[in-house]
Image (cartoon, rainbow, N blue to C red; front, side, top):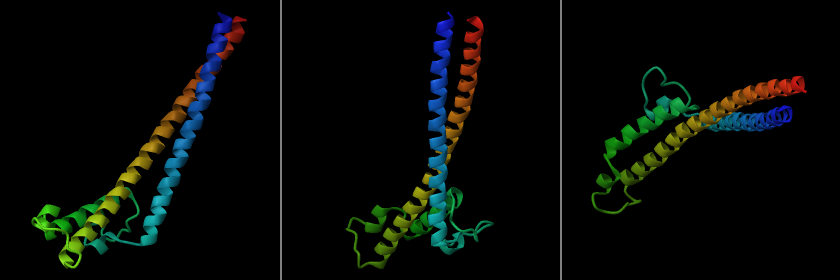
Length: 157
């Protein structure tokens, strides 16, 4: 019985170490990618007001998931003012790179996609950090359990 409890405690401690390492990696990767995204977006120095957004956040630089979402929604509204859908824009024809309306619509789609991708990326980095934090908490709980079992095994000896 003593040897079984000891072996179980060792397995739990190994799992705790693995969970801790993976948790720290998740938190590090999430935080570093979030910092990278923020830095890149700040370098562009685009404010919500530059895209025609109004409201209390209009003077904020787009550098986080919330402002990227607001900016993407604003660009989408403007793009829909040109044409409700891409099919409506083309009206059965083909994209014409010499038509300013077609080019503006395509540029708006690209900007909108960039902004929504930024909002999504910030969300993913937040999820990675939360998952990593949870793994660290689980690692600590497993580690404590492993040490308690190890001490119990020594007392049984």
